[in-house]
Length: 177
Image (cartoon, rainbow, N blue to C red; front, side, top):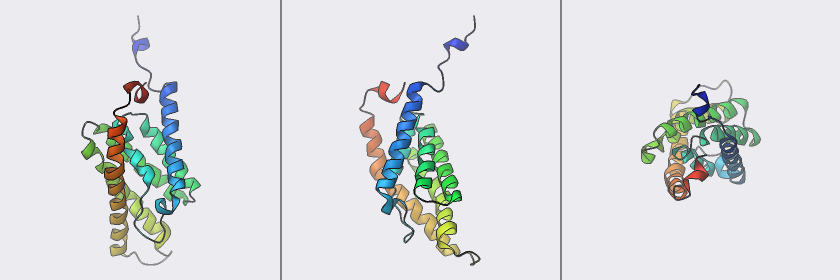
């Protein structure tokens, strides 16, 4: 008798629905708060939807949901192609690391800050600030990296961690299929 039938399927209807709901909520929050989600005039941005990047602490279903949600939000928000792709990649990497460190939520919350600062900061600088052909200004690049990381840090620790704590009170079967 094969033990393959005993293995829990990776993707169930419930997990796909949960991931889809997370993606949809991410998109809606990003677009509703667009003036502070995509700030071209200031390096500091507070993407409220990034509070959801801590959901992998509660469920692995959040990982693909956040990736798809960020990809769609950046595209629908008018981002250029490498902003759309690299922003979603930063979110995916952060979500994977957050899930891996889910037993330590305060530590897990640093990964969205880290990946967004290191990836999205330069993307914003090169895509929207630096004029084509202009020399690279390392202080300005560092400012954008730091500002993106700071905005992410505030959202993750001020909104994300309380969100996760509140959701932990829900019945477990809502978060895990």
